[in-house]
Length: 202
Image 1 (cartoon, rainbow, N blue to C red):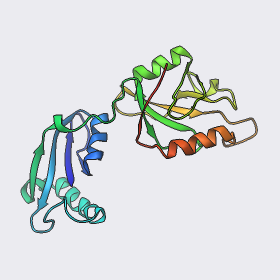
Image 2 (cartoon, helix red, strand yellow):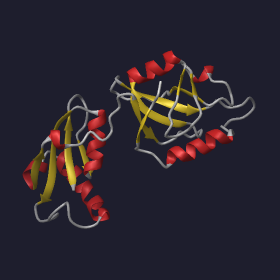
Image 3 (cartoon, rainbow, N blue to C red):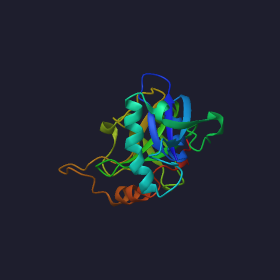
C-alpha cells in the first residue's frame, strides 16, 4: 500500500510504499499523522493490490496530487494509528546498518549519546558483524592505517540526536582507497545487512 506520512518540523511530507518504509521514517522523525492511500478516484482502484511495480508506478501520481494540494480531494484515505507502527529499529545502545561509503568503510546510524559513549570508552565491539574489537577514534585523522576502527562520519542528519559512525580504517600512505582485505570483507558483510538493527557493546 501507499502511505502519506506527515512529520513534525520543517520537513516535506513523505509518500512511501509499504509499512516497512513507514517504520524507517518513524526512526528519524516525530510523526504528525499516517494515512493509507486506499484508492485514487478511478485511476487506482486499490493501492494494496497488484505487483510492487504497479504500486511504484502509482507513487508519482500520488506525489503530484499531494504537491498540488489535491490528494485529499481525489483520494480515499484511511488514518493509521501511529501506536500500531512497530518500533522495529530501536537505536538505544544499538545501530542501523547503512550502505557503506565509496571507500569501503561501513556506516552505522546511532543516537548521538551512543557515539559519545563509544568515543569516551575508546573501543567497542559489535559481535553481529565482527569478532574483532574496534578502536574508537574522535576523527579519521586519528585512525591508524590498517587498524580496524570506528569514528564519527562527516555524514549527518537534520535531527541532532542522530549521528553516523564509520567502520573501517584509514588509507595507507601513497594510496587513494582502502586496500585492507579485512575492511573489504567487512564492507561486504555489512552490505548484506543494510537496514538491520544491531547491538553495540561499549
